[in-house]
Image 1 (cartoon, rainbow over the protein chains, first blue to last red):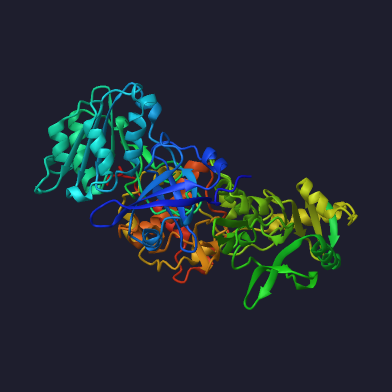
Image 2: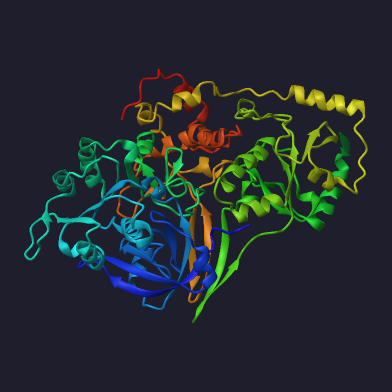
Length: 279
Length: 341
C-alpha cells in the first residue's frame, strides 16, 4: 500500500524574492532521487504539500509546469509558521514534498478552444503553470487563442516578471497586465481586473475562462464574464481552503460534500453553484 | 452457535493475550473504557457502554506517522506502520458499525490510509450484545440493533452464566480454534432468543425524508437558533465512533523529529481558519451545521450511509444536554422553504 503521508525528499535550489514587498518568495526544488522525479507526474492546477522538517507542512499550488522538467516551483506568501520558516531557509536545505494532489485544469476539454485566463494578486501560481504548459511547442497547437489578464496593486507585486516579459514578446498570447493605480514608468493598463476584463472583452465564443484571485476580484469579474456570454460550465475556478492531509480524510477543507483537496481544487462555476457558499 | 461458560472467559482472554494485543472494557473510575489488557481478570463486561468508543484502537488520538533524521545530504524517514495483531473484545454492535463507516473514509475513491487500514486488517472484533440498552441508545433507527452482528467477527450473547457464541466470519472462527467449544443446545439458543427479544430500545430518530430536508436547508434560519446552546467543546466529536477529523503536526528537536497526527474537531474555530484570517466556518452556527450536515447529508451523498450509529455518546457527554435526537426532530418539523442564501 502506497503511503500518501510520506514526503519525497527535495533540495531547495533557489529561494527567490518574487515581490518587492518581500512577502512572496518563489522556491525552486529539485528531487534528490531520479525515481521520485519520474513518479511525480503532475498537470497544471494540482498542488502539493511541502514539508519543512521540524516545523510542519502546508499545501501550495504547483507554479511550475510539467514541461519544465527537473524541478518544481512554488510561490509562497509569508503568512504562518511554516511559510515564515520557509522564507528564511537557505538554498541547499532538504525539504519534503508529497503529491501531486488534487485535480488539474481540464486540459482535455480546453483542446481546440480559446482560453481566457484571469488572475489577480499572488493567486497566479497555478495559472503560470497552465500558461507555460499551453505555450510549450508540443501543446500550443492544441489550443486556440490565449488571452491573459493579470492584475496586481502595483508593478512590484506582479509575480513572474521574467515570464511576463517573454510572453509580452510572443504573438501567440495576448497578455494584458494591469495595476490598480498609476505609477511612474508603468506603460500598461491601469484599473481593476473586472473593469479591464470588460474593456478587453474577450469573446466567449468557443472559449473557456479560468479565473483565480482574491474573492473581491472574483465577485466583480463574474458578472462581466456572464455579460460576455461565458456559461457557468465554461468558467473554471480554483478553491483554497485550509488543509492538512490533502487526501480527503482530515475533514476540514470540505465545501458541502466535496473535499477541496481530493475533489478539487479545480471546479467549474456550475459545480460551485451546486455547493454551499462555505469557502 | 457455540456455548462459552463465563468461568472460561478469563482463560480464553489470557490465551488470546499470548498472540494478540487484546483491548477490552475496563472499569476506569466512574466509567468504562477500552484498554489493552494483560490478563482476563481485568475485563468488566457488565457495562452499558464505554465513555469513548474503541475507535482509538485503530485510529489513535495521537500517533506518529513517521520519524525523520536530517542528514547533510538528505533525510532518513522511518515509517511508523503498526502491524501488530489485535483483538477488540466486548465491543458493542454500534461500535463495530462505526468501523464499517470509517472504512469509507480511510479507503476512499482515491487514497488509502495505511495506518488505519493495516490495523483494521489485523484486528478481530469480538462483540457483546446489549441486554439492556441505555435510554440514550437509538441504534435501531440507523439499521443496527443491540444484537446486530454486522461488522463483527464474533458476537457474544449473555444468557446469564453463559454466553451463546455466534461466529460471524472466518476470522472469528480462527480465534475460537483450540477452544473446542460445544454447540449451543436448544435451551441455550432459546435463552439467547429471549434475551434478544427483551432488549428493547426506548428512543429513536426519524430518518424518513431527513436527507431531502437537509438538501435544501443550508441557508435556513433554523441554524441561527439550533446551535446557540452549543459551547463548541467537541466532547461529541471526541466520543463519536464515526468522527475522523485530525490535525498533522511536527514535533522535533534538533535534527530529529516525528510527524504526528492528532484528533481534531470541526467544532473548533481554528479547524478551518485560513492563514489570511478568513474563516469559512467562523461561528458556532456554521460549525454546528457542518457537524449535522456531515453526518446526515454529506456522508450520505458520498458513501450512501448515515455517519451515525445511534450509540448516544454525544448525548451523554454533552455538558449542556444538546441532544442530537431533538435537533433532528426539530429539523424534521421544519416546513421546507426553498433554500436561498
